[in-house]
Length: 212
Image (cartoon, rainbow, N blue to C red; front, side, top):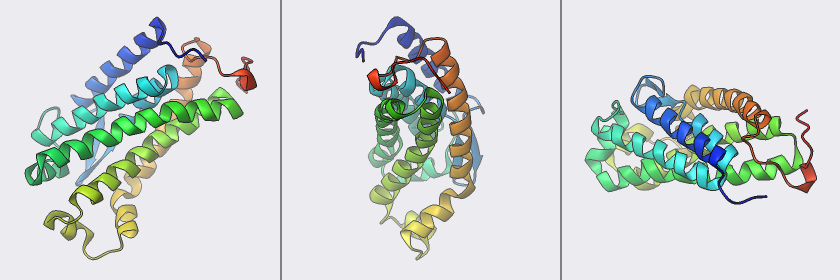
């Protein structure tokens, strides 16, 4: 597999970055419900990981993470939780918002390559889309609990509940909706880009152009 980033891949990466910025500074990217928000920004991150690989996914994830952090200070919208966390510890707030998104995009690049070796491109894109939302939620909540779990704010939110039950109840339908939307949209867009030859060819195990 060619490890160099091609011009078409750079075009897609630039487009995904532009879409992420557009979604961050318009109502398109977030649907705020209480302290959390349903985010569609995981989709461009997944597309970048599919077309460019781990590096592209990490770059797109970094853009997502940066715009998410800026919401803590009211740039590109306001995150109710982000404002509170920024007030508690600005450095931890940056880490909690930025690092999980970079890690998410980076891992997605490898995930797509692995799944693609054992399945068709359509399924690989859908799996990547699903895990884009799943890992984003997992890493985001893990960082939240690890960095802010002992704060008064988080203790009030947890309310003496088991951590796992708290996380499941806290993310609730938001995470389910994100995973469903990311799976479907990433699968469709990824397949279209594959047919347009924007997605790199797979290894020998799946060297044909079949998609079914």
